[in-house]
Image 1 (cartoon, rainbow, N blue to C red):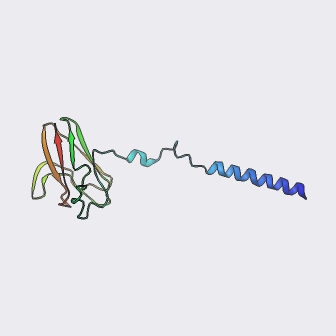
Image 2 (image 1 turned 120 degrees about the vertical axis):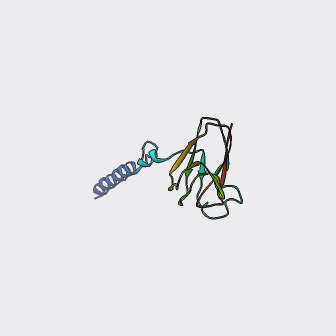
Image 3 (image 1 turned 180 degrees about the horizontal axis):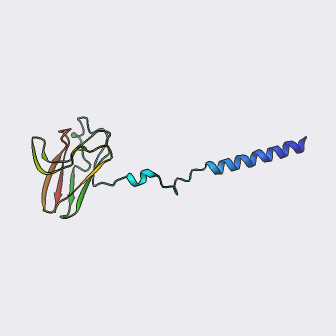
Length: 136
Protein backbone atom coordinates (compact mmCIF):
# COMPACT_ATOMS: atom_id res chain seq x y z
CA UNK A 1 0.00 0.00 0.00
CA UNK A 2 2.80 2.44 0.89
CA UNK A 3 4.51 1.55 -2.40
CA UNK A 4 1.36 2.48 -4.37
CA UNK A 5 1.02 5.80 -2.52
CA UNK A 6 4.71 6.61 -3.17
CA UNK A 7 4.38 5.86 -6.90
CA UNK A 8 1.15 7.85 -7.13
CA UNK A 9 2.77 10.80 -5.32
CA UNK A 10 5.75 10.71 -7.69
CA UNK A 11 3.43 10.71 -10.72
CA UNK A 12 1.48 13.68 -9.35
CA UNK A 13 4.72 15.63 -8.74
CA UNK A 14 5.92 14.91 -12.30
CA UNK A 15 2.60 16.07 -13.74
CA UNK A 16 2.71 19.29 -11.69
CA UNK A 17 6.27 20.01 -12.85
CA UNK A 18 5.34 19.39 -16.50
CA UNK A 19 2.31 21.68 -16.20
CA UNK A 20 4.37 24.38 -14.53
CA UNK A 21 6.89 24.40 -17.37
CA UNK A 22 4.22 24.33 -20.08
CA UNK A 23 2.34 27.25 -18.53
CA UNK A 24 5.42 29.41 -17.98
CA UNK A 25 5.11 32.75 -19.82
CA UNK A 26 7.80 33.14 -22.46
CA UNK A 27 6.49 36.52 -23.64
CA UNK A 28 10.02 37.92 -23.90
CA UNK A 29 10.60 35.72 -26.91
CA UNK A 30 7.16 36.00 -28.49
CA UNK A 31 6.20 38.60 -31.05
CA UNK A 32 2.53 39.47 -31.24
CA UNK A 33 0.55 40.78 -34.20
CA UNK A 34 0.15 44.13 -32.45
CA UNK A 35 3.92 44.70 -32.18
CA UNK A 36 3.96 45.83 -35.80
CA UNK A 37 1.06 48.23 -35.18
CA UNK A 38 2.74 50.34 -32.50
CA UNK A 39 3.82 53.64 -34.02
CA UNK A 40 6.37 55.77 -32.22
CA UNK A 41 5.60 59.46 -32.39
CA UNK A 42 7.29 62.76 -31.74
CA UNK A 43 4.06 64.25 -30.38
CA UNK A 44 1.40 62.23 -28.56
CA UNK A 45 -2.28 62.96 -28.01
CA UNK A 46 -2.70 61.27 -24.61
CA UNK A 47 -5.85 59.77 -23.14
CA UNK A 48 -8.73 61.94 -21.90
CA UNK A 49 -7.71 65.12 -23.76
CA UNK A 50 -11.03 65.17 -25.58
CA UNK A 51 -12.43 66.79 -22.42
CA UNK A 52 -11.55 70.36 -21.47
CA UNK A 53 -8.87 70.67 -18.81
CA UNK A 54 -5.71 69.39 -20.53
CA UNK A 55 -4.92 72.96 -21.60
CA UNK A 56 -4.55 73.99 -17.95
CA UNK A 57 -1.44 71.80 -17.58
CA UNK A 58 -0.49 72.19 -21.26
CA UNK A 59 -0.72 68.43 -21.89
CA UNK A 60 -3.22 68.25 -24.75
CA UNK A 61 -0.35 67.38 -27.08
CA UNK A 62 2.81 66.01 -25.44
CA UNK A 63 5.07 67.86 -25.87
CA UNK A 64 2.99 70.93 -26.66
CA UNK A 65 6.02 72.58 -28.26
CA UNK A 66 8.29 70.38 -30.37
CA UNK A 67 11.62 71.51 -31.85
CA UNK A 68 12.90 69.81 -35.00
CA UNK A 69 15.28 70.34 -37.89
CA UNK A 70 14.39 71.33 -41.45
CA UNK A 71 13.61 68.33 -43.63
CA UNK A 72 12.85 65.94 -40.76
CA UNK A 73 9.36 64.52 -40.42
CA UNK A 74 7.29 65.13 -37.30
CA UNK A 75 4.87 62.34 -36.34
CA UNK A 76 1.80 62.72 -34.16
CA UNK A 77 0.12 59.64 -32.64
CA UNK A 78 -3.38 59.58 -31.19
CA UNK A 79 -3.24 57.55 -27.95
CA UNK A 80 -6.73 58.65 -26.94
CA UNK A 81 -9.95 56.71 -27.47
CA UNK A 82 -11.48 59.76 -29.18
CA UNK A 83 -10.87 61.14 -32.66
CA UNK A 84 -8.44 64.07 -32.93
CA UNK A 85 -6.79 66.13 -35.65
CA UNK A 86 -3.57 68.01 -36.30
CA UNK A 87 -4.50 71.13 -38.26
CA UNK A 88 -2.24 74.10 -38.95
CA UNK A 89 -3.08 77.50 -37.54
CA UNK A 90 -5.54 78.31 -34.77
CA UNK A 91 -9.14 77.23 -34.25
CA UNK A 92 -10.42 80.63 -35.36
CA UNK A 93 -7.84 80.91 -38.19
CA UNK A 94 -6.71 77.66 -39.84
CA UNK A 95 -3.84 78.18 -42.32
CA UNK A 96 -4.25 75.21 -44.72
CA UNK A 97 -0.54 74.26 -44.47
CA UNK A 98 -1.35 70.79 -43.15
CA UNK A 99 -4.37 68.88 -41.90
CA UNK A 100 -4.48 65.29 -40.72
CA UNK A 101 -8.23 64.97 -40.95
CA UNK A 102 -9.78 62.97 -38.12
CA UNK A 103 -7.29 60.52 -36.62
CA UNK A 104 -8.69 57.28 -35.23
CA UNK A 105 -7.33 56.00 -31.92
CA UNK A 106 -3.69 54.89 -32.37
CA UNK A 107 -3.54 56.32 -35.88
CA UNK A 108 -0.59 58.54 -36.77
CA UNK A 109 0.09 61.50 -39.04
CA UNK A 110 3.41 62.90 -40.25
CA UNK A 111 4.50 66.20 -41.80
CA UNK A 112 7.94 67.14 -43.10
CA UNK A 113 8.77 70.82 -42.62
CA UNK A 114 11.10 72.17 -45.32
CA UNK A 115 11.28 75.74 -44.04
CA UNK A 116 12.41 77.14 -40.70
CA UNK A 117 9.77 78.80 -38.58
CA UNK A 118 7.10 78.32 -35.96
CA UNK A 119 4.04 76.31 -36.94
CA UNK A 120 0.99 76.46 -34.68
CA UNK A 121 -1.62 73.72 -34.84
CA UNK A 122 -4.83 72.65 -33.12
CA UNK A 123 -7.51 69.94 -33.04
CA UNK A 124 -10.59 70.78 -35.11
CA UNK A 125 -12.77 68.68 -32.80
CA UNK A 126 -11.42 70.02 -29.49
CA UNK A 127 -10.49 73.72 -29.79
CA UNK A 128 -8.66 73.79 -26.43
CA UNK A 129 -6.04 71.43 -27.85
CA UNK A 130 -3.15 73.52 -29.22
CA UNK A 131 0.48 72.84 -30.03
CA UNK A 132 3.48 74.22 -31.85
CA UNK A 133 6.32 72.91 -34.00
CA UNK A 134 9.50 74.99 -34.11
CA UNK A 135 11.66 74.20 -37.14
CA UNK A 136 15.30 75.31 -36.96
